[in-house]
Amino acid sequence: MKKFLTLLCMITCIFGLTACGSGEQLTEYEQQKVEYAQRLAGEVVVPMLSQFQKDAYFDEYTLEEVEYMVGNQYNLNVRGYGFTRALSSFAAAKEEIGEITGVGDITASIDGNEIIVEVEVTGEKKNATAEVIISNDSFMYLESAALNPASTTLDLMGVAGLNTLIGMGTVFCVLILISAIISCFRFIAKAQDKAAKKKAPVKEASGVDNALAQIVEQEAAVEEADDLELVAVIAAAIAASEGAVTTDGFVVRSIRRRR
Image (cartoon, rainbow, N blue to C red):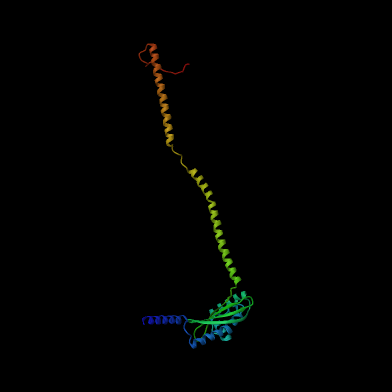
């Protein structure tokens, strides 16, 4: 019994989720508005916007005047700013798709306070999709519209190739710049060496130099001591030969080595 109840609850939950995923059903009044929005977009909005080559005609009028003129001439409630933007979008797209030759499938859906209608459009050069947004109220205002050219496989490949080229070009440019910066390091090192040589202080005597100087001084002192001892011996010999007791009266003028 428990297994049966568990299975029954699971089936109920599955059907509940399925019902939630299917979306809310439109009421009869909402369905009428959707159908009217489809006819309005396909029979009035798209043909009307496609016949204008540009929106320069409406530049001389205010938004309120544009709303009044379109309402009287085409029996269509519009928002002034939305209508002028729709004219600009259609004029720009017609340069790419050419003249509009026909209208195809029309789909519509309600999104909150808006009814979004998509109209398949056939052009001389390529097809496009017209997106028409109408207010979800009893007045059915034209909020905005745009004509989007369809992207062919060739167009997509061209865009992908351009993106690849830009990406690879950027990488190569950065690598070349890095290589140039690295090659400049040797010049920077040479400049630093020259500056260091100019500013380098006089080197102090190292330990080896000090030791050599001390050895030279000691040898000079030894030689000087040897000379003094030689002078004393010579003076004593002279004093002995002269019969003098001391050498106080002797003065050594020079010493010469004899063979």
